[in-house]
Image (cartoon, rainbow, N blue to C red; front, side, top):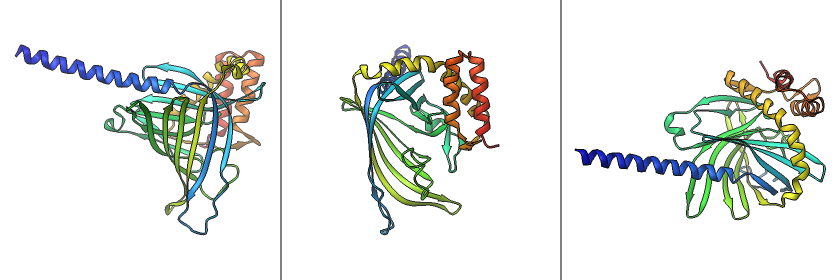
Length: 304
């Protein structure tokens, strides 16, 4: 009996060690997404069920991007992306939060509306939710997947609905939902964000496929010297944006549905929050003032 007990105990310890090892592998892969990069963006439409559909031109762009870890705990890693333009301009870009075994997600519907969904324990076990946010830290999309580490390859994959991509939302109105299949995997030079997307027309009668596209966003390590001004700029701004995140987190926790009015009083939300960030740095606001002003701006754009 004693031998059986010891055997079971050893098995439990081994299983626990393996789980911890897998979790640590996941964390190392996510942390590897941070760094200094040159990013190339390539997208091309590949298929449309309507033979009369005219494919839109391929999209190609590139830039320098610094992905910096802002929070790092055993089950949550926050990475802020900063787009560097020339020697003296930085744009606070998208943000990605990685949360392990997260029980709730915001699911995009349409028309700048996201709805909170609760996942079953079996759906979240061993999996990571990637929460992607707009430049103003408003929601973009959230999805769940499993990091896989095999044959030297480290990859995470998911599928989810999202708003139109930034490259198209001011130019197109012929579809209103982008259904993403996202693959994130590490490469010898950095990492790749590969996408197989469906452009969906969503209406009361259901979803209709307009076109499919292939996308590659390749992050290749770049010289840290390119980011000297970005470091200086972010050192001044990061406290303000940490407070903005806390305001958003509180609003997400209190609301089952988040709907955003893009423009209020002639201004888009990100314009207001960017201006407040500059004002906070100039006038040396404290955390309470940051939260007060950010909350006022954000709530003005939330639909009741």
